[in-house]
Image (cartoon, rainbow, N blue to C red; front, side, top):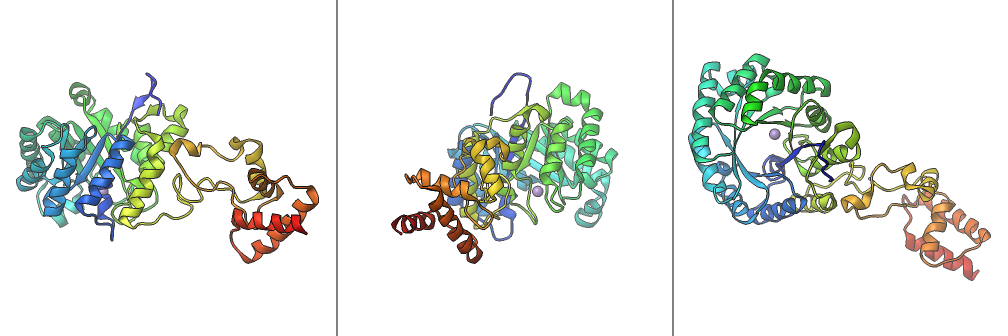
Amino acid sequence: MTNDNLAKKIKIFDTTLRDGEQSPGASMNAFEKLEIARQLAKLNVDIIEAGFAVSSNDDFEAVKKIAMEIKGPVICSLARLVKEDIDRAWEAVKYSNNPRIHVFIATSKIHIEKKLKMSNEKVISNIKDMVSYAKSLCNDIEFSAEDASRTDFDFMILALKTAIIAGASTINIPDTVGYAQPQEFGKRIKKIIKELKDLIDKKNITVSVHCHDDLGNAVANSLSGIKNGATQVEGCINGIGERAGNCAIEELIMNLETRKNYYNCCTEINLKEIFLTSKLVSEITGLNLSRNKAIVGRNAFSHEAGIHQHGMFADKNTYEIMNKESIGWIGESIVIGKHSGKHAIKEILTKSGYNITEPILNEINLKVKNLADLKKQITNESIIEMANNSIKN
Ligand code: MN
């Protein structure tokens, strides 16, 4: 993506290997994780959250291997705000040239009372002690206030302020349960930045967002966060992740790219690797994409309706807002079905070297319509076969 001087740089934090792996049925072994990490480095994400080192020996090994091999992106491990987690995270990421420890604790009333069973004071003193401890090991510390979007605003500010003073250089605002609405979430981000402005400026703090898709708002909420000042976005390839998943990174990136004038932001993502990265993640996790998935779905750049096909032949911009080659998308753009017209049939045949007359084209078109009533989609091969038969007759 081009980076002009005025555009604000947005850091892409990929958590496909951590939050994404928490998708039911998507667990990966260390070898598979390494393969995805290599592709994420080609995609040129800024940060790879490689796992949750304390969660299992396998995950520890995966994070360690990725930290040893993958150069370029920051390599990060998640850790709860407890010494054992932080030690384990550091043991795994310390092999990277750019290691990061990402610590988190819940800050909403319901999580503090029902899950943590702690007092608010204890949460704050934990943040102070454990962020300082993590900072004593690793220079790059990210702090997340889990369930931030449902947290009392003043308490959230106190938690974030404490984390910054203790050494966090990135503060992450997660919509852990996918409850937020775009405008409301954006307002919260703006208010946080306003409230902590002096600290953010003085210590050069990155404000990050991490949104879930329970109500289908993860990408919209993340974009609203960016519009209101966030400079890091966390998400997963193909939008995988806990429950309904995380912000789909490819969708977020293509919003910033396609509507550059609206956002005035840039990323350092290598767009051409988007499609391949999506395919790899889908193959390794076994989580198939729906055909109509934005950006990377099989139908994302396919046109079946005759009116659309006609427009596409005249000028691609009539029905496409993105250039599919720019993201490395591979697939059929013109699909023949019951809604298609003669223009598309002629285009397919001309490309295959046929120079057919109008009466023959009409004849083939009729055959296609009849066949399309029986079959959902008609291959280019069967159109060529029809042409051969019509010409012979
Ligand atoms: Mn999450």
